[in-house]
Amino acid sequence: MDILENSIIKECMSMNIILMGPPGAGKGTQATKLVNKYGLTQISTGDLFRKALSEQTKYGVIAKYFMQFGHLVPDDYTIEMVREYLKENTFENGFILDGFPRTIVQARELESIAKEFNFTIDAIINLDIPQEKLVSRLSGRRTCKNCGTTFHVEFNPPKVTGVCDKCGGELYQREDESVEAVTVRLDTYNKQTRPLIDYYTMKGTIININGDQPMEDVFKDIEKSLEGK
Ligand code: AP5
Ligand code: MG
Ligand code: ZN
Image (tube, rainbow, N blue to C red; front, side, top):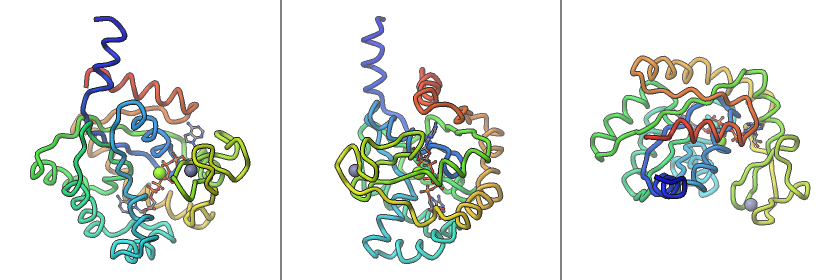
């Protein structure tokens, strides 16, 4: 099989991926690359909560209280929102769960949702990065108000300061990027989400990727790990 044929097959395949990692690890950045390359749909629970918040829907009102201080939104609401989203949408080429599950309870519920809706999770990717690198990633991030594209003042700066390269929208800093909220988010991750790594390691399904390298290299490693999936 030649390289072109192989890449066409790869780009047409359907797969469902869980993308895990601490706050600022690069989940959103790598999810965007996976969307562009494989036509997957990104399902970021953080983005869904922020959208719900801006639209003042039920989930938004509940989530605001927890998100602004860096705590997890309670499992019941989060699971219900994801369940609804998976039920109401179709994913021709598959999806990436970006930031879900984040607790063992969520992971178990996802397993029963998968049985109920008859889908499989084909890869669980964990972006591994030392904690001390995360604060600068988070404090330097800028997000487009209009299209959600993320930049970094140092590592991935926009062409014009404060302006989105993609759509010209205004760039802003998220509410949960204050030093206090970031500290709580990292602590929450260590207590509630890190145990998931052991959970999936014991099941033998986790793929650890070194997230502490340039974005393109992280993506290359992810691509390699997906070969044959
Ligand atoms: P969410 O929005 O998911 O936030 P998070 O997990 O804290 O992760 P981030 O989005 O901050 O980081 P990221 O890993 O996507 O990194 P990014 O690619 O942007 O969740 C927010 C909140 O919602 C939670 O705190 C919680 O309250 C709630 N929530 C969400 N899901 C939930 C759930 N399942 N259960 C309960 N509550 C939930 O990159 C960060 C920056 O670094 C960017 O500026 C980027 O340009 C830069 N960067 C990325 N990769 C690299 C690289 N390789 N080198 C240099 N810079 C890089
Ligand atoms: Mg994100
Ligand atoms: Zn934009």
